[in-house]
Image 1 (cartoon, rainbow, N blue to C red):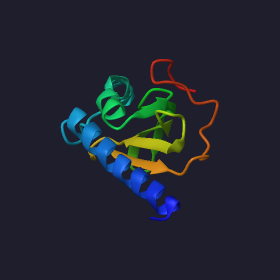
Image 2: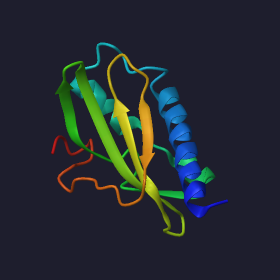
Image 3: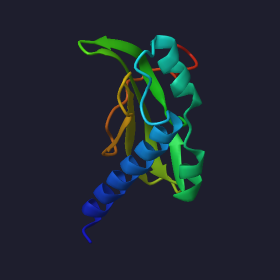
Image 4: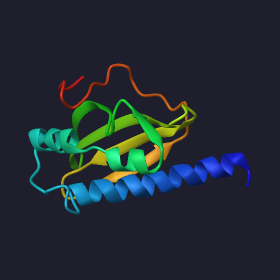
Length: 129
């Protein structure tokens, strides 16, 4: 298999595994009436230690990563989080983005390695950037 296709397949698989994990954590959907504090609390409670161990991965910063904080969009609130994902040996896989939006299932995607994450973003524990 072409190495690039293999890496893309790994990112797609990881996106699905993380999405399923986060969906279970939030019991299917982010509650419709979630406010800023609720979204940040959900993010603080997320972790992917089992996925990290099972697939020999490393998340930096620890999953779900860092955020610019809860943003107001035309459809309501949204919290976007990001972290780098690599093999345990340090080989980069990509950047995992997790989106929490009230009333919707969580969404996770893994972008190619080198996708930037703003240095101004902070962990959900630290508050908004």
